[in-house]
Image (tube, rainbow, N blue to C red; front, side, top):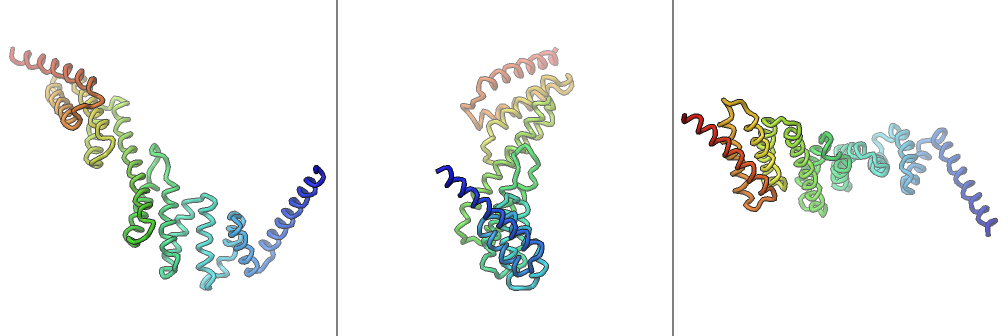
Length: 271
């Protein structure tokens, strides 16, 4: 049994070496037709890295020829297969521009947007690719409103919009966390204006209130009264929107402290 396994292993290694030898020979010494045929076989076998090397080599020879449409699509798919998503997005997009009458244009348009989507980073990083992916999916929806991919496109757009919301919320929270209370109030205001209906609304209203509360209590005397009133207005907005807020106990404590401070200022003013 062990001898049979060794023989099979030897055969597999031999075939692998022969395959590598054939690939190297065609890559370096084969003509463009041979390279095209081998690249296609490698692509169909899922060996995308090797296929790409051959495709890149033969593309100049096939410019303007009928095979070029298929080559460009396979190049895009090969980059997708190797998870080089920004390159696959580029090549799929380029395909739609170069072959506007192709039967694969719709598929390429979707895969370009999907590739951009797969290249998007986590919310803590720069979101340039996320904006690009949303735009690409929106263009796809506008061009192909009857596509069976519309539901998926809308799903991915929503997912990325939530990521952008989280990014903006995290920036505002970071201002609060680093004691930049005035900047935090403005940032949370902008967040709430930009993201109506956001799932972060309660959190944003609370941390805006908390930032306004901390800003007021740490203000100089000349600004304290106005800022306390602004903080109380922020709290009132939170309570109006979320009567049973998960932050109810914290909010009650903030109101008491702000009211006490305001009463103290008012009593001094009256003297």
